[in-house]
Length: 124
Image (tube, rainbow, N blue to C red):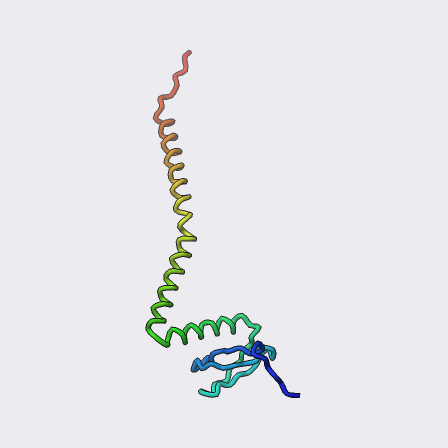
């Protein structure tokens, strides 16, 4: 019986050494892959999160290394993402900090007025 793969049962990955594109089967599980260009042998598991993240990084590196324009686009997108995350995390705290600062100033002023008030004299 011959193995017939449909286009959906294969995935394109990058070699970890030379970043050459390789087609590997998805339904075989953990496999040992040998790159035909550099002859580097490595293991690939399509069900592993670490292998998937490694392939994403390799894809980004190969895309960025193709041209300077791709590098500039990647850097701009990364800076925008960092700025958005920064303002999402710390932007709302600044508003809350301003409110708490105003409340702290009001509390401080009320304590100061209490201390500056003359003590009531008791009449005997």
